[in-house]
Amino acid sequence: MTTSQDDAENLYLVRRYSEIVRDEMSDEPLSQGLAAKVDADIEREKKGKFLAEDAVMNLLGDDAINTKFYESICATKLLDLESKSLELQTTWVKFSTKLKLVDDSKVAATSKPDMNIVRSAIYSAQSKIQKDQSSKVGKVKAFFTKSIQCLDDHNYLFDLLPSGDKYTSVFTGAFSAIVKATATHEKIANEISDSLDEISDQVRSFFFAVSLHPRSMYIKYHIALFYYELFGFLISVMREWYQSSWTRFSKSFGSSFLETTVQGTLKTLSQYTQRVKDEDARMTRELNTRQLMALGTIMQSTFKAQVKMKKDIDRKFNEFSLQSNRLMGPPPLPASKLQAFEGTKDVAPEDVVSLIAAAPKWTRDSIMRDVEAFRPYLQAAEDVDKLVELGRSIDVNTDISATVHRWITSDRSEALWIEGPSGTSLPSQSTLISAFILGNLRRVEIPAMVDFCQYDPKHWRTWNAEKEFLKMTYAFIYQAAKVLPERLEPELVERDFSTARFQKLNENVSSLPEAIHLLADLITVGPRLQFCIVDGLQLFGGRNLSGLVRKSLKDFVTILCEAVAKASGGERIIKVLFTTDGIVGELADSARARLLTRQTFYDEDEDELLAINDEDLVK
Image (cartoon, rainbow, N blue to C red; front, top):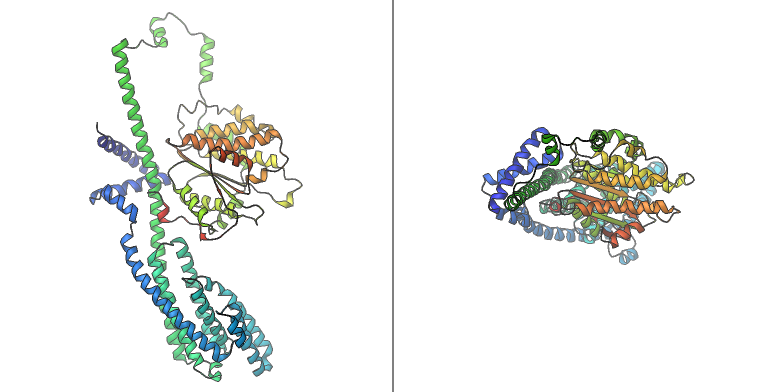
């Protein structure tokens, strides 16, 4: 049989299996992913799409043509935006000069407007109004307090502009002009404040869209349109103001200006915002679909490899049997069958008892019954949920981001250690990285063994490192049992999972060696896709641990890393992540032994938002 024929037959068997699990395990995310992958493959085959095209699309991406198109027009629009920003900057200079928002010396010393100039504009307006309306000093003070608060509420806008200082500076200057006007008349204050609120909400949606889809040229193009329109609005507002006398400036614009300019601009900006929201929703749906297909691809590859391996073993065994028969004749009957036929020898009763006793009596259900005693050692669910929520939006440096993406999305087993700086505020960036990964695994319903080691200084008198390490080990034993497959492989059930073995473990740290061996055995019979996350092992370093506990900590790290090494290149995928605030000697030893990958960062830089994007998924 040729290789292509083998592949076709293997693919057929995998597809038949996919149909079975689709019906029997319709709620399981892995079966959903496998079914989605098979459906997509069949659909592509119907349309006559072949592997050559797949290779091209993997290189260019599904939106390659769309991306090239928007790269071109986005570049043009960004040039227009730069021109508009220069026009805005010129308008701001004329405006600030006419209204004398700051001293001439300060203008000369400050090359670009900043937040201090904005506040200076507010205080200047406040001083003038108080001179004219001394009888209303209390009301004026309250109003300016509100204006300062409004300024702080919208301050983040300055950090979300397309291209840094040149846009930020002119926008800040224009904002100071708006605050100047809002400080002089209540109607203008209400109109402009409402407008800023609405614009702020729209820019906030841009922030999340760009964070989740940083390579989308369609989104960047519409953000450029948004700011182009916004800059034009600010120019028209300032021109209307600085061309007027101070008396008119202190009163109000005509209703036509407010309705036409303000409301018209907001309507246009809302159109651009809606397009970005629609694109964000579309890409998010596509991301979820691709994540399912990625899981399906991994499972499909695993099953195909299993089918091929079994066929290869069967073929080689048959070839060996034929060759053996030709050389030595047919094999003799087993001794047990000869005894049954001939009746020449009886089996001793004690031998029968020992054979029965040796037969394994444990299943997944029996293991779950025995492990129930370890449930109290689990970390409080609300504590973990809180960390997951905090980890939903975390900025990290680019090296860490790339490492996390590669580790979580690759189709191979790997142990990873992310070592962050010590002495940082809690929860640290390292802890939140683990929380981010756990949140993503939960989102696609992939179970993971996890523990966030924590230390509260308020409990320093009662906190015991050795006891806490024992509790963490027991928590992992419970979680390892929870993810066991429904059906255990016969050759693996030969391991000892007897009730007596579980009952040997107690709250004394002397139980640690046996507990760690039991954890290793449970991981051995675990599911084909298994994640393990351990955060905070540095809490057990540098303390007065006994020799037994120090060795147990080393064994704990070793058994996890060795489980990954044994799974590499096989049928299972095991991923283990350690995150720490500072160095841990046991992890450093494993890194030197090349049992895990070490990634270190020394400052909690925030170069980019940590996210799982379409392009990062393994096809």
